[in-house]
Image: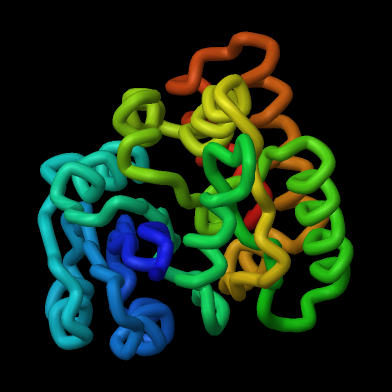
Length: 238
């Protein structure tokens, strides 16, 4: 007799804003996977994000507020799955991800999980970023949002969903989850776009990220951090 875990519906929740270009690649591989539903939460796109998402069979809901935390919480409310997986619009899941997710959540003391990270492209230094992300994730049990975080819907509701923050929502979610159990890093990689690193280069992107994390740990308000993040990004492109 099959274990109940093998029959759990996985809801993949994708927050999106003007992602018509990236969604086809992310969604195409999900169409033939059984026991999976896809919920795209649009934050007010003015491109073809909504029509593209629907053309691939995704359920689309609109968010009155553009912001990843708010959009993902709305998606979770609309989802029917026993398991929730939060996927960035520019990230592709690996083959066999559904079984890997279900298996991970059966492990003793595992409360949530994520995947190892691979970054497309060959920008100088990007392989070092991958290595650093994957080491940090395993040693510190602190994966971030671009690693496709997943957990049971019951767990997500119990911790109150993503905190209503304009930035660092995934970081804070992981801190709360670690208090309840182990974060499993699945030995398979998601492939994410290199667009952030293309825009600012690896050194600047890494430095800005570390400044924001340090500020958060020192108690700087997330609203101020969000302003800093946008400001630092603009200065770096000048």
